[in-house]
Length: 181
Image (tube, rainbow, N blue to C red; front, side, top):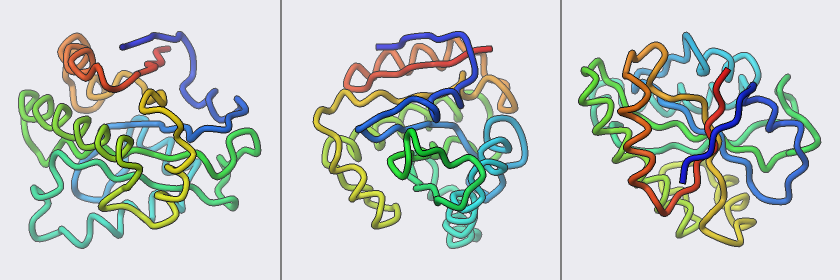
C-alpha cells in the first residue's frame, strides 16, 4: 500500500509514537550523504551518518556487495534532529540502490533492498545493523509498521517516480507513506 502526504517528511519527528518510526531513503554504497534527503539526514543525524559511512568503508574495495541491502541506523539523543516525540525509536533505513549504475539497476536494487527491509521487520532482526536497532524492532507489534519516505530515487538518481512507485506497489507486505513537497 502506498499513501501520499503533501508536506515535509521530517514532520514525522514531531508525532508521538510508541512504535518504531522508520524513514527510508535510497543511498549509494560509497559512504556519502552529499545531496538531497541524505544530506538533510546527515545534518540532522550526524551520529547515524557516521555509522553509515563507517559501514560503507568496510566495503570500499567491493561496494557492489552492499547493493540490495538495507541498513537500519539508530539516532542519538545528541543529534540536532532528535525529538522527544519519537525519541530513540526513530530509525533511518538506508536502501543501498546505487553503485554508479543506471536507472534500471537502481530500480532493481530498490526492489531487492525493500525485500530485505521487509525481512528485517518480519523477523525483528537487522542482520547487518547495530545491536540497539534489534531492541527497537521488538516494539513492532505488526508487520504493517509504516515506512516513511520521500519520493526515493527521483532526485539525484534521476529515476522517474512512477517507475519506483510500481516497485513499492509490488511490496504488499509493506505499508509506505510517501511525502512530496
